[in-house]
Amino acid sequence: MKRIQLVVSYDGTEFCGWAAQTGQRTVQSTLREAVRRISGEEIEIVGASRTDSGAHAKGQVCHFNSEVNIEPEKWARIMNKVLDPDVAVVSSKQVLETFHSRFSAQDRFYRYRILTGVRDPIRSRFVHEYGRSLDVPKMHVAAQALQGDHDFKAFTEELDPGVENTRRTLISLKVSQNRDEVWVDVVGTAFLRGMMRRISGALLETGRGYRPIEEVGRLLGEERNNLQWPVVLPANGLCLMRVRYGRHPKDNRSGDNRSASISI
Image 1 (cartoon, one colour):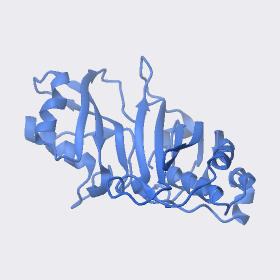
Image 2 (tube, rainbow, N blue to C red; image 1 turned 90 degrees about the vertical axis):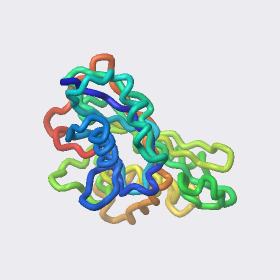
Image 3 (cartoon, helix red, strand yellow; image 1 turned 60 degrees about the vertical axis):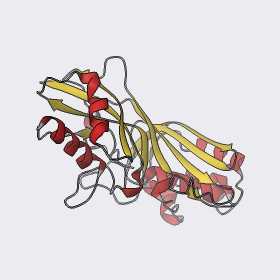
Image 4 (spheres, rainbow, N blue to C red; image 1 turned 135 degrees about the horizontal axis):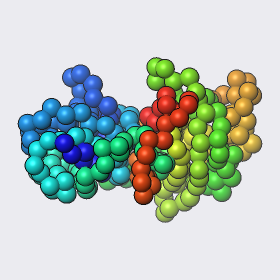
């Protein structure tokens, strides 16, 4: 038995998210079917993040166990021969059986792209088309209030069943202008469902002058109940850029973190 780690890239437009759903095309079920076609094995593929319908990934990480005699590094090339054009395995390798794509991750890096220029059909699947200028320095200042360990209840969408702890830790947040796009780059240990899209929504509201800078930080405390919660921006602007693991990955779950959601 070998545990194989895959790094996967996908255009999420035509997928109903990562997680397998009966009768729906998802990334997880597509990869699982590819393995079945190659080796005949009925395996389970575990991903680092359950991205929502329409969200993309450049560096999604997943793993599965296989008993067939295929060199681990060759899984990527073989799987790409049977996968559709909107999903690809970037790399594959064997990892220790104690490795877990989700719970061994140290942090995750997401990027939300907002198009402030003229509508561009070439990029429309991968950006939120806002079409107007934003005050990017103000957005960046507002984002810094979210760094650290906080209760992000006001930045969630629908919580996954069983998730009671809404505290999460964000390591860094950066908002920058890149030609005619604004990028919201966030690195965190774990995320709640819809959290990244609400963070981007709050910052967009700040950049357009709708929400004061100081109000973003107030959404982290009890004052949230007296404030309008941020809009959830569309999933197409969101991309999982990278999942980072240490030199010796281990299961990082402990206490409340054992039920932590990392859906986006």
